[in-house]
Image 1: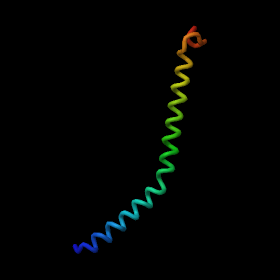
Image 2 (image 1 turned 135 degrees about the vertical axis):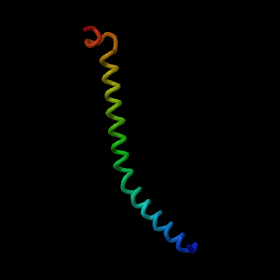
Image 3 (image 1 turned 180 degrees about the vertical axis):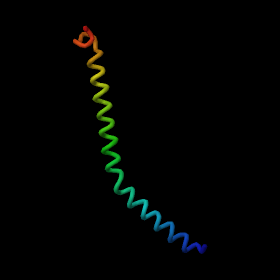
Image 4 (image 1 turned 90 degrees about the vertical axis):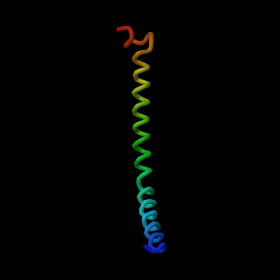
Length: 59
């Protein structure tokens, strides 16, 4: 295969990957943020429920 064809194919594939990467990170970041926020809320809830002196710990 001549080098010019290889370079053309490489550039075409790189353009495809850039187009895909431009669409997905926003969705991935939202999902990661929601997951992180959800686990943080679970952790806070567990800390509040097991904290000494709370109603949950007394029962």
